Length: 403
Ligand code: PMP
Image (cartoon, rainbow, N blue to C red; front, side):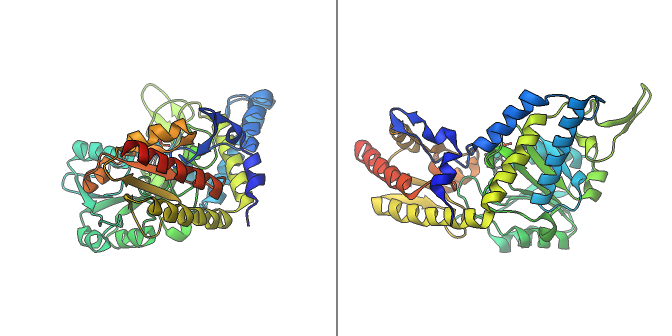
């Protein structure tokens, strides 16, 4: 059992008011809030040992380097990667995906096939379209059913010896659906295709084990897991990372540089050109410590309770359509008949409630449902049933005003 009131005290932002009302933050799928422990870690870094890493002999640089590499090990352990250098530190999910898309340009040729799911975030569609334009490869899409689940029979039918890569999110950001990624990975491997799983939305709720999944690449962003913005990870199997060319050229990623030829550093530095977000990486480690101390099983169970409670209450409001059913994280993507989602979002913001409205960077899903967007309420372990009650009253009020 989580002590929610104690947990809430860790999040200073939850004390603030918005438009004269206590903040109710239900936009956790966009970014999560930051506990004091992570804020303290950031302050400590800039107050005590701010220095560039991997290059100074002086004490501050060594302290910063140690803390940075310790954070890499925390991330490695959290995702159960077998080696620290299989964790590449990036600016976030988007950069991690682009790194892979860029690298695969060297392997993919005209006529090869790349499979993405119908449930992808734009950041998991556009880089592959760019790769296909560049190489002449063909993009295929795993279709979805009306309930938001992916059609696994259609997926298996798409796979063949031309399939080089399969990309799918672990959890859909627009609907909260948890995808059957183990099945997707195993089937792709039967045709020797590599698989990248976008864990951006799963990471705050589900502890992924990259070895048990046998996934080739797994990516996520710290800012959705109680960490800072501008930091994320790319997990890659060592053999793949060794094969892929560097993504960015610059300092830190080289072995020897002459004007005739440059040789590259080994993993992970080959992919980490330039001064990274040192403080952000260290704070990412602190965020994982914080969440692991609470425990992912307890987080998942409590958030599920919030999801069930809110779903029932919301449906009772009437004229509500919820998009996506089945195995889900604590996300409710919905519309109220004849009301634009943006109008609902604007009215409830006046009541201090933060939700996301729009296409959630997943326009193909909105096109599938033939809607301009949805209202998305996404819950975290620091939210409460009382907040959901207030949210439901606000939705009723918005519905009355807008009908
Ligand atoms: N994929 C998914 C499923 C996401 O939800 C997001 C963030 N909304 C991203 C990718 C992109 O993450 P970032 O903006 O942190 O790079």
